[in-house]
Length: 176
Image (cartoon, rainbow, N blue to C red):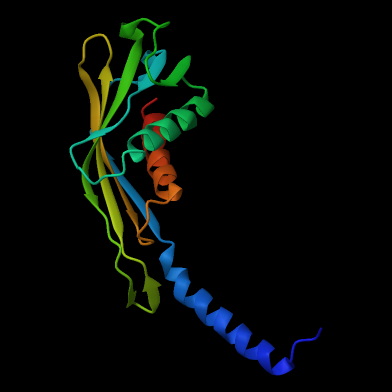
């Protein structure tokens, strides 16, 4: 069965316009700031990543485990520490272990749809997470920082978690 030629051109125009409108909907940005540390992380054998916390009631609870889990997996792939684990590390002494703690301090969800700057926007989501690297044995802070994620898609897409996890790993690699 052949389609009439007069329908092909309008269909192509509609798809092109849709692609141009949606192109502004995939913007994910991540920034971070960490306090400088004189302690090199290579002085430790293990990195224990804890479940992130928040007092924000409407923050998606599964996100509190997705981000640290992704961070631990990325750091483990680097093979810099003897052990990296999302959860408790028991086989390496506490004085040789650092702990990554995180707290979601800000979350701005949005579900509104608008046309802005020549593109269709599905709202904007922003997340700010305060982080601390602490010595497991003493509880002393080694470094603190903050990672901010922004997505113009308006959804808690896995890409925003991956982007934020990559930013945390970037800092750990820089101080290793």
